[in-house]
Length: 379
Image 1 (cartoon, rainbow, N blue to C red):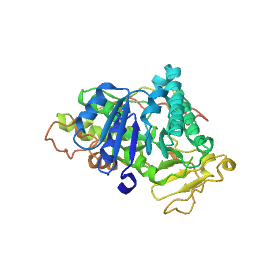
Image 2 (spheres, one colour):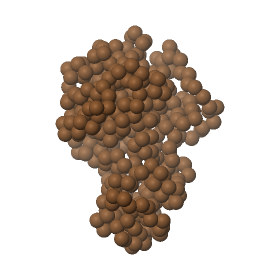
Image 3 (tube, helix red, strand yellow):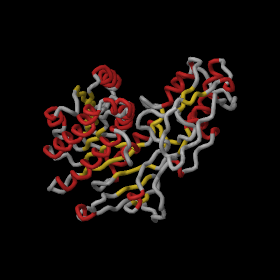
Image 4 (cartoon, helix red, strand yellow):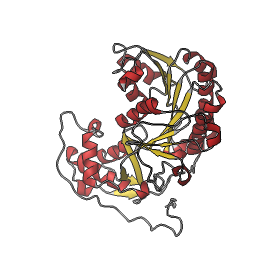
C-alpha cells in the first residue's frame, strides 16, 4: 500500500486530532513527497510539528476549514486529501447547532470547492456511525457531509476527481471516548458511570482507524462509503474488563469497583448502526470492509464500482451492533492489552496483573419500554 502514497503531496485536515496524528505517523513510513497538516489547535499543531520536524517533509498550516481562502491556498498542488476536521461531540453539537453546521457541513463544502478549483485527484472524508439514521445534530451534520462528498462526483464535470467517505465506529482511546473516562474513574476511586447495561458499540483502535482511512484511499472509485468490519463490545463489559486490568495496578480490588447507571445523554442510541436497511441493497462486501454504493444509481452510472477480492453478497441485514455477537470480557481484556489501549494509564514499568473478577453494580437498569428497544429512557 505504501507504493500508492509514493511521491504524493497529501493534505490532512484536523491533523492534530487523535486519528490525524496516527495517520501522520503511518504516512511518514511511506515515501510521500510532502505531508501538509492543517488544524485550528495552535498548541497541538506546534507539538505535532516539533515531534516530526526531523522525520520527513511535514508542513504545518494553522487554520480552520471554515476559512475558504485558507483551504484554497493549502490545497494547491495536492494529490490527496484526508478530511478529518470536525466537531464530533454529540452533546456539544446539540447545544451549539450553528457551530456544527459551520464546521461539519460548510467546512466540507469549502473543502470540496477548494479541491475542485485546484483539481485535487482524490478526497477521503471521515464520517461517523452517527450519520446512520441520525437522531442528533452531530449525526445529521455528518450525514450531510457524506451527501456533499458523494454529490461532488457528479457536480465535478471533468470525471477525473474522486470523492468518497469512510464511516467509523468508536475509536478506543481517542479523545472523548469512554476509555479515558472509565480509566480516570477507576484510578480516582469513583464509580464507573454507564448509561445503560444493554448498550453495545462497534470498536476499533486508533491504529485500525488510521489504517482504514489509508486503505480507503487506495480502493475508492467515487461516491461510495466504506465501512470497516469491527468487533462489538457491550459497554458494561468494557468497564468490567478495564476494572479488572487497571485496579490491581493501583492496589485496588476489582470486585469492589462498582458502576452507576446514569441514563442517556442527549442524542445517544442504545446500539450503533453503520448502515441502514436501505443501504444493504446497494452493498458490496470485501474481506475487511463493506462498500456502500451511491443511492441514486442513474446519476453515477458512469462510475465502475469494482474492488479487489470482492466477496459474494450474502448479507441481508444492516450492520448494527445489536445484531452482532459481542466480545466476552476475557476477549476484551486481551484486545485492550494487545493494542496497548490502557498503557498510558499504567505507572511506568508496570506489567499486567492476571486477576479477574466481576464488576458489581448499584442497581439494575429499568427494563426497556415496550416498542422502544432502541431509544434511551431518562433516569
